[in-house]
Image: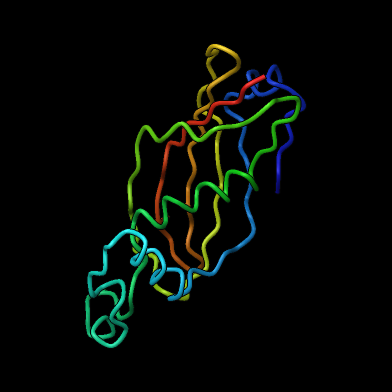
Length: 151
């Protein structure tokens, strides 16, 4: 579910606002393999399906950084800021990878606006995103994303 902020002022007043959840997304082996190819991280736990079956998780798992990279599309589903010239990914303050995401798992995110500060030309917002795995008690990851929205 997308929360819409009509302008920067509404976003600035949104500290503490809960966002989401997003739609479920299946993390496929093709996604994991593509991420491995793009980053050069081809450790067996990610790409060797047969070896991973006998490994600690019983299947291949997504890279933690792949899980973190899903914050970009998840954030677009969580919040829409209108009345801006652009939004920019400014980075992350903190990321924790709590539960491995097995290939074939479905994940979705919720968020919370935790900080909004003025910056030259706009505002900077920190949204804490929790990535959940269907059927798991603990989240896959908790990531403090930092975005800039320019007027």
